[in-house]
Image (cartoon, rainbow, N blue to C red; front, side, top):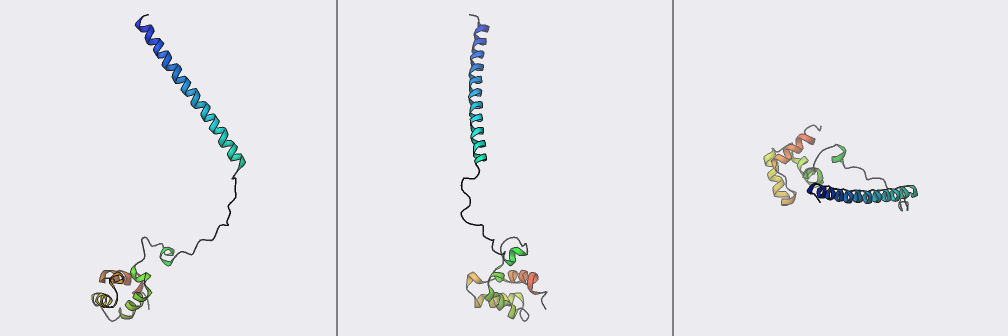
Length: 126
């Protein structure tokens, strides 16, 4: 047998194998499609067991569409009251020192935090 003839026969065998794989894949796709069609026609097998509940009201921070997390002053009413009671009489540095002496480290805020909070909330109040 000539070299060209053996190459043709080898190519033909490869093509037959590829055709067989394609036919098998096509049959599997048809089977899966039929299964999916039957499941869609059947619908949801079990309805929801509990009714949907209303979502909780958004917190003021989210309602105002503010990104990130609320400041310590906004989330700590005692700290906020402490700052509001003194902000008209003390500067930001002195107020930060007062906060540091009155509150534990995890509840303290610095002068920059007080300043930012004051510009967002307090300075426009009457």
